Image (cartoon, rainbow, N blue to C red; front, side):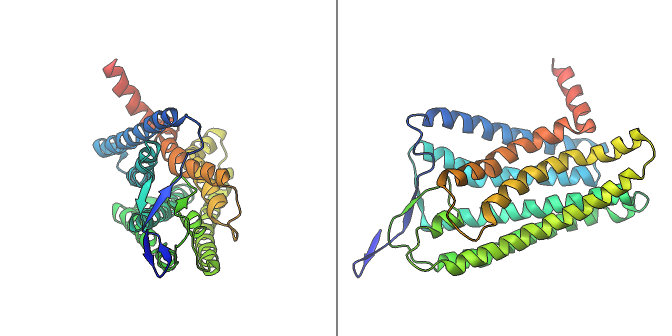
Length: 309
């Protein structure tokens, strides 16, 4: 800390993380390491399969590859620091904390809108199959993905600027597993009512806009599927949406419960559980879900493993 006129200004924070585990840190470190390695290798495997098999070079799998690439960076923002915290390296600089918050939310917003773009892709494929090849070209796919990244880059800027203007002159202990808006605002000496209001407004707008688009897409998809006369046809049409819908429910559920709120009075354990779900478990589930619920990827994996064994 730096002392100016009898007031201490915080230059570093201590992330308490899982400090109350009573000797279980080694076990959690091992578990988190395994999950992180599995997440990285699983997403790299999905990307490599899609890139090396030309019959997977169409919009659905292009979005899946981009999502896997995004998840690699998304977990990289938080999980390595969680692992070092478990080894008692709990310090993080003020600037480092702000950067972690920015990139966490930048990548989170990008994922939110990438999932929205994937819902639109499924809507076009099922509801407009004849026009689908001419509308969802390679160019339009990458334009949609680029738009998601732009929204992600600019989405958290206002919140970060407001956060950087707060004064921190008391405790520097963050009661969370990584730096985030709410735990940091709880340490501020200055008034945070504007920050809380802006956080709620921006998070609500971005999440509900994306979720509304996804719900609209799926309502139209369900309507189109129900018009298909054969049971087999309906099952085949909706099977392409199952993996995406599972990821949407996991991601939006945990993020919504964590960030769309006007008060900061949730328990520390509640915030930790929600944070683990959306920052660790959801990225781990993505390659599993898209591998197990996708016939083409399952078939490729089956052939690969049959050659190996």
